[in-house]
Image 1 (tube, rainbow, N blue to C red):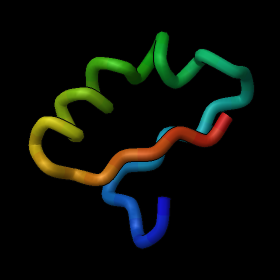
Image 2 (image 1 turned 60 degrees about the vertical axis):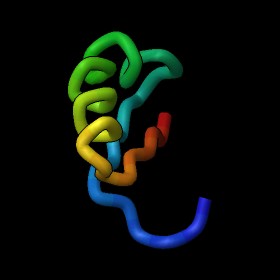
Image 3 (image 1 turned 120 degrees about the vertical axis):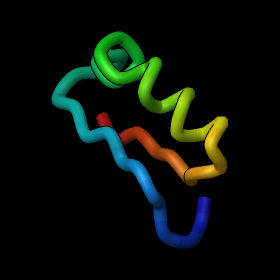
Image 4 (image 1 turned 180 degrees about the horizontal axis):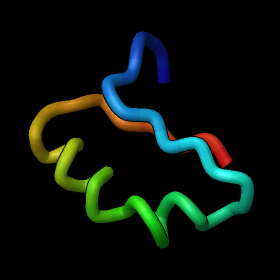
Length: 39
């Protein structure tokens, strides 16, 4: 992926972003925002 992101979830452990922020990430992506996860 290249370019800037609109939403970035930064978590300490693998799968934390999906568990705790998954719904928000999906809504953001469906709204056309570029999302990313760093864990």
